[in-house]
Image 1 (cartoon, helix red, strand yellow):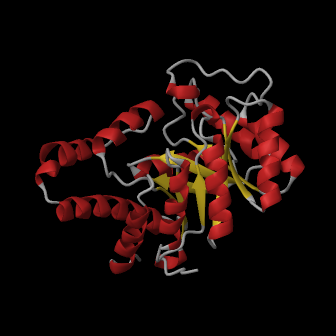
Image 2 (cartoon, one colour; image 1 turned 90 degrees about the vertical axis):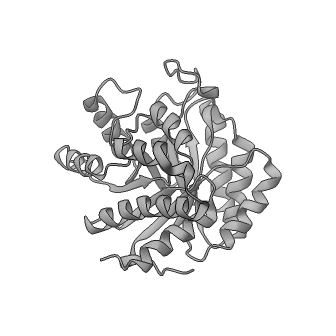
Image 3 (cartoon, one colour; image 1 turned 30 degrees about the horizontal axis):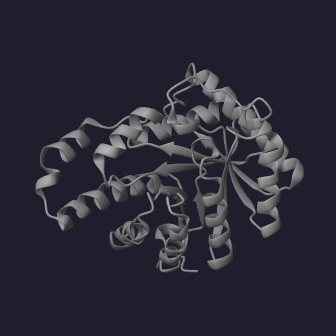
Amino acid sequence: MNNIFPKNVNFSYEVFPPQDISNNFKLVEKINALRYKPNFISVTYGAGGSNRDKTMDLVRRIHQDTDIDVAAHLTCVGSSISDTMSLVDYYLKIGVNKILALRGDSPNNISKQYEGHPRGFQKTGELIKAIKKLSDIQVYTAGYPEKHPDSVDLRSDIENLKDKINSGSNDIITQYFFDNNLFYTYRELLTVNKIEANLIPGIIPITNFQKIREFSIKCGASIPKTFEVIFDDHFSNLDNEEQLEIVLSIIADQAKDLIANGINNLHIYSLNQISLMDQIINKLNIDNVK
């Protein structure tokens, strides 16, 4: 495993199962071709558990066919407690030792108030407790520097996070953000509220600004006005190499600032653009992060 990262920083990547399950093999091939191997790779589950079979297959392939740890996403939505725990059982049997426990979103991304499965876990803390009771594996959970879009206010969001940590999770992966000051404020807020856990910032490359903008509206992530200028005004007039340089520079600058402010774990939402991950890390190495 190649650990030539700046200042011994650990990186992890998120991937999602391709629409066609047969393409899982190609995705794993790309992962094996990475020059810079991440600390682990997380695999998304899909709204309402819609990608269950694809997720299970991709988790198994990454676990068995690479030398990289895999964290399987698991949600409360759309499944009974029995079905959810059978999936945990499956992961434990094949040797997976990391799970990212999430509440999950409504099926088909329908914009309506969240409702738990009548026979399922009603909140993430319940899911985490059940997993930890079954096995003392590493369970990650989610944090929201700009508040979860369904939360009434930041206070209730923090109380929910406390419940997840008290239920047995020691690692928080945040929703992506573009303004690092939002993350630093969030970090201070967790300290004030005595939430002691490993806080891992999530960052994302802006490879398609329109799609990022649409998704950011849904998940409550704000976009700096400077980005609107960069990507709306002249980005499309640049050649591919110039566009790539802007994309790499933005995320590398963000990562450098986080590292300079004491962060030694970063989670990158890869958008399945695996080769781009090497380019991001290489950009950090070339610039000699200090």
